[in-house]
Image (cartoon, rainbow, N blue to C red):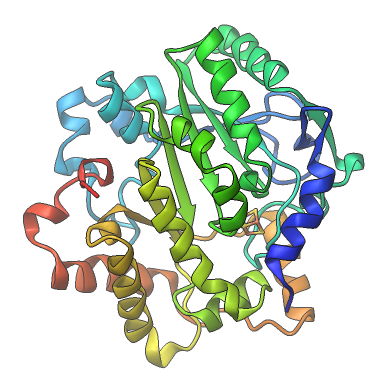
Length: 352
Ligand code: SF4
């Protein structure tokens, strides 16, 4: 197991050059089978809410129970509420404006998650697998592609890899976005592992995160420090940094959300582990569990390879059904601690 803080520092040196940021070359990398959503070699898009029933519903219906709760497949009806709902809620504009999301991946990550759908070489901060872009070039690409897009495209998403290893990219892209396309929304994905870097840039970051047109999601890795280490490959002691980082981001006035993969190791103690995790989230903020979206892990090509690599490194494979984990969290644990009224809210309607 490795030191993820140290890894972040090493990666950081190779991810910024002359005010430009290294982005992964996604095209041809095999992340998305068929490459349906690759826009150029370095940018792709994601439709966050795209089922036909949702698209054909009115705005009132889209904000109703019709899209909350479980579907027939045993998972949530709406797999990802945000950034679509958070942007619409905060900016008071139609949901359909924020479903198609322009996405880039910073080409380095300080974790090696077993379920990661990004090929490891794309997360190694190696120029061979990416290209340096300035914030200006990134926003210009966004505007060029937005112009050609049939569906509205108003969200820029900075993902990874781990973008907060070089969080200057967030500050620069936001400034550029506000200069050239102030009606847009910025969405940030983080793995909550860069506490010291965030502290260093605290005030500049707060100026961005506290804006209405910015949202951020922190992906927790596992419900306990043991599971965290199996999933990420990092030492167990770094698990607590996730909670400290979440707390700090909320202090910086971020519109903050949570993900967790539906992976729990050790069949016998699934509920106990999930409940312990819920308590830890509540220590950060009493309503934070209501802002969590559980991730169903898919069998993407690179994820299969990453799983095999993790197995060879001695990390065990999850032995619990993802459906069972979803069921326990949403149908047993949340109702134990929150009222029906609270449970009928979309994540963005929950106050922190
Ligand atoms: S899942 Fe996210 S945090 Fe984990 S290795 Fe992949 S990019 Fe990094």
